[in-house]
Amino acid sequence: MVPKNTAESAPAAANQFTAADIAAILCARGWLNPGLPDEQGAPGSELAAWMNEAAVLLGPHAASRDALADLLCLVFNYDARAILRRPESHAVLAREGAREVIRELAHQVLEGPPVDSDRFKEIVSALKERLHHRGRKLFHPIRLALAGRAGEGELDRVILLLDGAAALPSRFAVKGTRQRMLEFCASME
Image 1: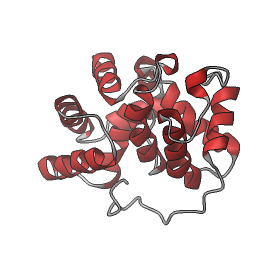
Image 2 (image 1 turned 120 degrees about the vertical axis):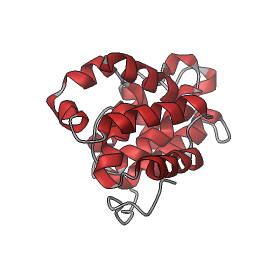
Image 3 (image 1 turned 90 degrees about the vertical axis):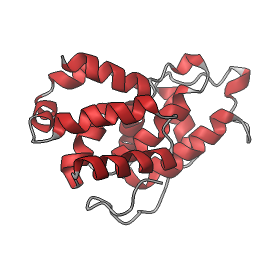
Image 4 (image 1 turned 30 degrees about the vertical axis):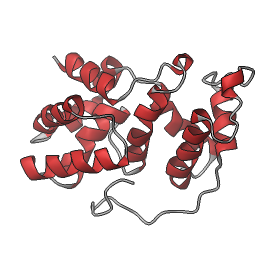
């Protein structure tokens, strides 16, 4: 899971969503074709495991099915140029230390293995140690670069899903953390 010692952590809410809810949203958005043999969501399949993980990670942070779909959109839709055109993105990047966080984040993501819960903890710990930033000063630039918007802890859960989703069948075309980091840095210039 993500670091629990951040000021932005909140108690976990009850999860009203399952992998079936994730599958229904993916089908409705055109990200999943239930007619394909490897997308049946049979227990034990990589896709079923990813959908279950998505339900576990995102479900407690979504008050409605629409909110859950909005979080899933962050996994499947990423355009760094569009992200960087938004005023709220400029507000995050204008804060003291934000670009330093982005540079170090890029180094951590590009030099290491895919990002899962343990790797995310390592990255956050390394950033805290090297940059001595905490709270929003640290997490908002991370979330902006990898999830596509600044915000609270639910975006950390989106980040945890990226590399797993990117490894699923190519029809998903999810940009993993490395690809997002490269695109984000290239678009900043």
